[in-house]
Length: 518
Picture 1 (cartoon, one colour):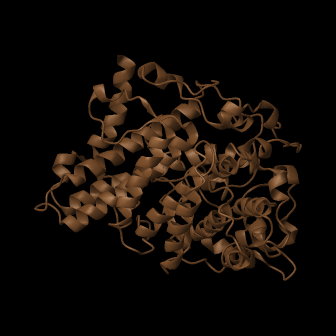
Picture 2 (cartoon, rainbow, N blue to C red; picture 1 turned 90 degrees about the horizontal axis):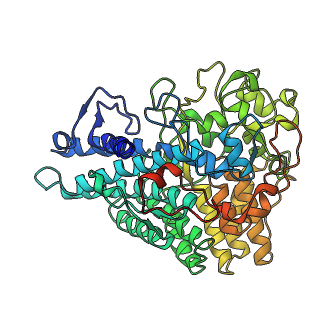
Picture 3 (spheres, helix red, strand yellow; picture 1 turned 45 degrees about the horizontal axis):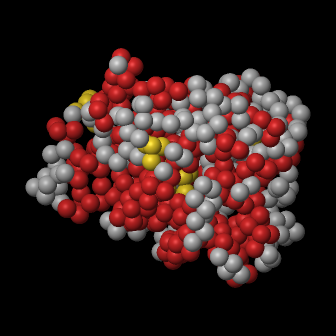
């Protein structure tokens, strides 16, 4: 009972007390004091402040930096599930739990997996509190239009968390409302079909009450629709294999493309610039701020500002997989922007991108370098870069995949989607050849490859491989030398396509059943 009470207190305390005293950036909380929900939810201003807590709650999807309060602040789902557990990077023998994720040597007692589960459920309860409590406000306190918009934003944020949970564990408790009672903690697991149905319901209802605009960091109609398209596509693969969802994805993604709200940024590196975070290519990004503000991120520490292996941060524990690097052509701007062949402590970002003399680092220790920062900086594990969640480039590639899944992808559609990205990436006329219509399977493989080159290190690769049915094949054959813990393929067993439910959760909830094989 002690352990159960302790975990419940952590779940409840973060929803009962919300931070106030926020600055002008809706995604950045600078706490000055605490208020209970009843004291806060008396007017529109209080409701919006409460909603800001829901934006803060989705940060563990990618990670939060070293000053984040709560357990496992450095353990982000997108890093560990989406990238470390796929085929974009390799991990060295000294990488701790990350090595276990990379090598597929997980057990139900691995701390990082437990921390990610706990952080996501704490976050889910916070967002549920926003949905439930703002929904209950009457029109004397808040105008119905504002109330519906705030609730819609929170429902989309809730879907982001549920999507992370069902992707990684598949069989998860579906927490639909705020939990404030110990007796409500022992929920049974829901089937993936039930979780996906709930997410679709949330997104459909939310889209009706959201504005059609870029959003500047706020949830909008276009993001709700784009996330719905991503969910429909994921449903076409394992474990649901509902191929009829290709048509649903096509329809909703076409609406995003026809909205006129989003477009590609002309220069690929500018998409990720710190002074250009809310550009028109960002359908939605998760807000971060740092260093030293308790709102910094880890994703861009792993794949951005830090330098040599001896300079701390994630750079010492993550290297680029040769098979990934080899997919790029030399004069693909994405190759220059996304992979560091230089020491980022010794060269400016401009020199790293443009000066061949800087590229002196051996291939075995190339690192991710998608987010660039001037040196010196104090960013280790506490970077200020917002983390992309869905970009317009992703929308274009998803649309191409949805058409191809139905056998409808023609050259005109390829030129509208994949070839727009290749055109932007091309530094010379002979580089990055255009995609040409081919067989359905050939085009499936080409789109999957394009997603890795364009969206690498943004946390979607493992979902992509699982959906494509290629996961086991693609995580095999990592034979490069240097600081690599070895080829993950021989360790992989089919049941490891999902993560184990933490033992600590099985102990406090008798209704949970461990995923088969663990």
